[in-house]
Amino acid sequence: MKLMRKSLLGPAAALLLVAGVGAACGGGSAQPSGSIKVTMTEFKFDHSDIEAKAGKVTFFLVNSGSAQHDMVIEDTGGKVVAKSDLISAGDSGVFTVNDLSAGSYTFICYVPGHKEAGMTGTLTVS
Image 1 (cartoon, rainbow, N blue to C red):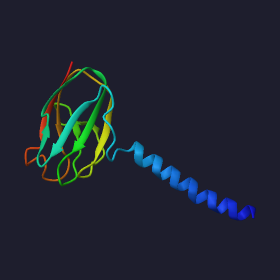
Image 2 (cartoon, rainbow, N blue to C red; image 1 turned 30 degrees about the vertical axis):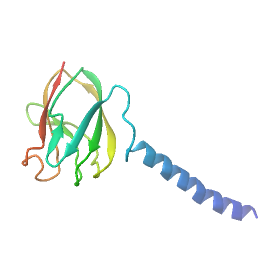
Image 3 (spheres, rainbow, N blue to C red; image 1 turned 90 degrees about the vertical axis):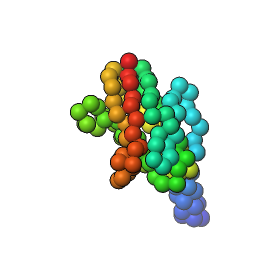
Image 4 (cartoon, helix red, strand yellow; image 1 turned 45 degrees about the horizontal axis):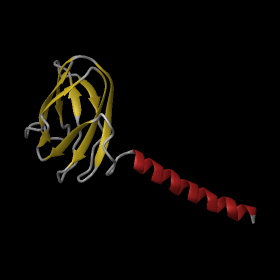
């Protein structure tokens, strides 16, 4: 009997773990307090000009398009400062950048062809 109970507990625990991870990764999550909402569609960011305070910056990414999108922040030299996970069509996710310095940045979608189609924006950090 003990073996049966252990074998049932393992799959049940695995299901709970998977459910917990799914809730934490986005997929329709609620916008965190103090975050900056950025809506992504083909082929633009809404808002394409964003202002934030230096330090920890949290973005709430909402994909209202029909393709996957992400948000990549580059410095003025084109070096990647931070990159979000890909957000599937109809999903949302939280993208946090720790210790963002004051300055001007560009953000783009790294999905091939999206930047070239105009999916870019400016982030000003003060």
